[in-house]
Image (tube, rainbow, N blue to C red):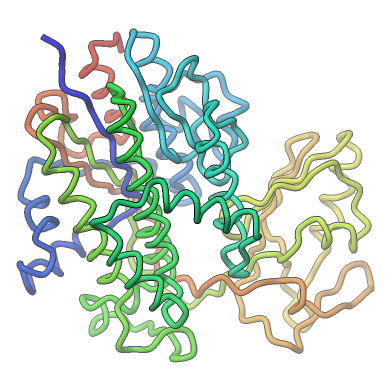
Length: 438
């Protein structure tokens, strides 16, 4: 008998212990999430070293059925340099149809996908349709320029057309409500994107009817990272507070996020024609100090100001960027220059993490203190204003932890991993569901 179709919902980094806390206070507030936490589920584990707890590592583990020690993919976007098989092409090679919407650090190796829209950070092609290509471009631009609230005319037009094409009428009130409030509550912009991706995925799934489909949603991880201290369960027990200029004490962005996810989760788990696997990959816990995040406004322009010769620079998530060079010597010189950039009067490097890969550098802007209008940076005896070069991203509120969560419908439960299994076992469970040798 043909198995039901399977949808993998990647609800990135959500802490379901916090969800349970909200539900215990008012079980009718998020009824679908309340129902979800009462369904079959397991806790998952991942790596133990903190620098290996990154979603672009753990989602590769889910997609490949391998631990980090086995797949060795450490950076966002590095899947394109790997030959490790992913479940997407493995399911396709079994004669089944596959669709993907924004799965993190996933490469499009499908020969005849139902649909494939890349994540905003990985340089891999969309499927051959105009919609997937244009939406992939627009989403990448908006996400990577989010800290500057910048959207190009081209991206705005592409997303507007996408809303006309994919937004479901039942969700119009949600779009309008969130849009009108997003100016004073900027975290809502991420929720608009997740709702839109859900509608795009739902529409494509209904039309193309793949056997296996994946949807990645990241607004919850973004909101926990930036506003966890404001969540209702943490306000009274956390010693760290967000300043009023950052977010009003009365606001609870985590509750706003759960309100939207309650809608999305309810719609998927009410389907009778599919099995559902919902996983978080890893999760977050409240951060133990105050730390500021900044991002370069214009990566290429800043490198030119430093006199660095390079071929290309690709922004990654939040503070990271990848610089490629013509030769290893140019990369070595650039590494020396970037390592020498200090923040004046702080004796602290601006770029505390620089990974030299021969002809490329993976760089992270690690300076953790507040950057004011008077802040300056020094490089090789020259001083210049720092504030015009960077955009404020957030005050870090949430930090990664290795424990994750997985929920599934009854038909998938017989294939589910055991309690506290490594998250890579979810990928193996998917292969078992489709009777693919593991």
